[in-house]
Length: 185
Length: 172
Image (tube, rainbow over all chains, first blue to last red; front, side):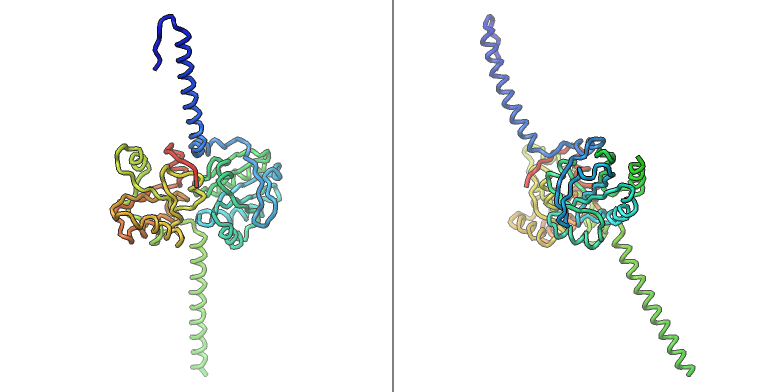
């Protein structure tokens, strides 16, 4: 408790000092707890119009997958998993876009959020995907604002800036329109 | 001669019908595989009775309430999603869509009284496509649990829990 004693400024300052130190300690504890907590709710949507977090992975074909290498291309970054039914409806369409718009500068990249790479590999083979797919993890998911539900797709422009985010069952026609607009820039 | 020709044309008609039916079946199953229509079978999330669904706000209040008996909250989805973010206090049970997940779930609750309030959740994908909550719910009911609720997350865990400001924690 802070008690004011007339004419005893030093003591008051000392008491303030103790209080501040206590408050400081509490702030440190709070900061540590906050650091343990997941990204804040707004993190996902605040990714828009910001540079896409870079990552380097080894894809399922054992080739290096470095997002920075696609600077100058429009990147469709798709987070998916083998257990996600809507994802598997989208992916053949993404493969078709890769064929159709690849020559104009589109690069589709898939990130599987499966716990087991074998499950992802089966889907890649079944759907005959024509674009690189790598395994994701918690760190990569967090860097994109949290992958807390699938499907989740980002459109990244030629400068590496995130221009669109589609969560859940997306309107693929609308996504294609946005994609074409980015390719035309 | 005439009889023989009639037999041949009848056989051709039967063969054509068989081929038509086979191609129709193949075509319909291919369409079904490509469709994003929500599943509605016994393992679907839609198999959970509406009365057994719990809204996020209700669970949040229940977890915040002082002195109230806390439910056992189990995540029955995929591990990576749990590790990224989950409801504070929730335990990972394993995916309800897989036999190993159901076995883990069964082991976790085997010693609990059958009237224990258990809340299951997943939120991996839109409700109608979730492969986990339906089988997990069915398994607990089969085991005789009478107070099982399923957290209703229509879009996914991110949109319907985390983005709405309800608390989450990370961890294995």
